[in-house]
Amino acid sequence: MIDRTAVRNNANYLRNVRPIDPEEIAEYIEGTPHPAVVRETLREEAFDLRLRERDDGTFVPVEERPVGRPGWSPDALPERYTFALEDLLVEEYGANWHRGESGDALRERVRDLKADYLYENDVEYDRVAALGYAIYHLPAYYATVGYVLDDLVENGLLDRTIRVLDVGAGVGGPALGLCDYLPDDAVVEYHAVEPSAATDVLDRMLDETGRNFRTTVHETTAEAFLGLEGGGGAAPAAADASDSADAAYASDAADPAADDPFDLVLFGNVLSELADPVAVADAALDALAPDGSLVAFAPADRNTAIGLRRIEREVVAAGGDPGRDAEIYSPTLRLWPDAVPTDPGWSFDVAGDLAVPPFQRRLDEAAARGETDEPGEFVNVDVQFAYSILRPDGRRRVDVEASAERCARMAESERHVTDRVNHLAVKLSHDLSEGDNALYRVGDGSQATDHYLVCTRETALNRDLREADYGAVVFVENGLVLWNEDEGAYNVVVDDETVVDLVAP
Image (tube, rainbow, N blue to C red; front, side):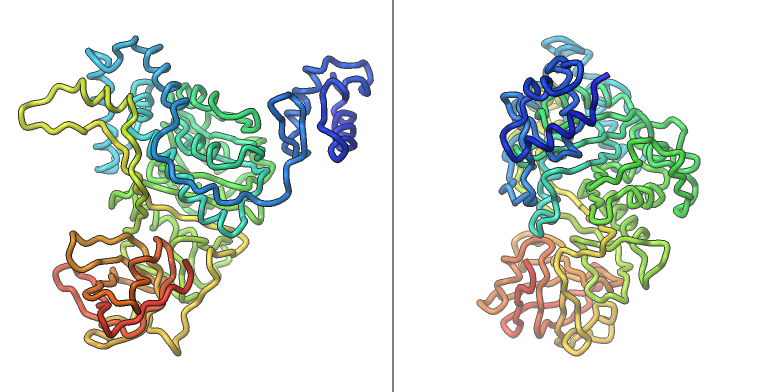
């Protein structure tokens, strides 16, 4: 057995002198171990030593500065991931996987998955379902994670050495997106929790990640991994949880990998599949480092998006509840610190569409259609997602609060109908209109009913409303509050008497 302490000591000595060469270190270790053994030991110790492996097999220190914004805006799933998935399909079904019985089986599973998500049915993943899921969802989920991480990176909150837990990792979309989002000099210790047949696909996709993206797949449930009581039972993709949101966190029963804190915990499109997502999210917060982040995202459809917001609100209670130790970092900032929103909360971001990947095109073109059937049933390149970032250290993306001296609470809009008021608001949608007056969902963290800003006349003084990004904070001066009976919502009219200022982008 190699003397790991000696390897570490030699690496620490050389780190600021020259690149660390396993062959050189081998000469200084008792017994002169083979350089390949030294190299593997350095790989295992690299995260703690903050070392990254270069293409030539030597190791150098990881920079201390945080990850900068990479300008994430993918227009397609990278070819190496496309080829990897196509290889799996060919291995399983042959070159004509998209035709005949195999194509019909895959299309049927995609239809089933879409229906299960729409009607909130339990989702089960066997081998065919996992491949169908990858065909339909992998590209968009790959793109989504980077757009969400932008919120953390803009404040320098993502380190170049990062320990990640991916809960319900599925077929690897978020993992691949994370790998490509981070710079080449980052070192990642990545742990995937996935109890279903999707692990076969996941393993193959993770083979395409870089040498410094070190992966471990735990074929168990989230509940068992995190040590929740009653979490050891088998279940698909994201499994049985305990019966209470306040279930005990039993660290002595957790997976040993959970003993060290994580810098980032990902829930990529999985919370809606858990029996008790609040209990699991609470346990995941316990597994975070004090300055870590819990990142959850979900499809933009009404059920899953509202479900995500419901979980967020249960995990982050109001009034300093001692049982909750997290703050909403983004996007649904609570601008009135003593308030909690109770509106439905259907809010989602939209990014640019991806190019149709070859595997989606093949599956779609081979489908049998009637004369009135339109193509595109098996194409999914829209990047639309709801998301939530929680942090135990209380950090928020922007440190802004509303003032009663200057603003009206949205919770009190009923008393202001037909009045002109000021609002501090978070922009929580892109333009939802169909070409008429621009319409944007907004919130301030106090609203009990949906609120929209309706721009009936854009001027130089209110143009910031249109130009502000999703999640931006705007100050609306002199907006006209009206009740929309048809929609059961408040419309705040922005016209030539209204000023909109961007407070925080």
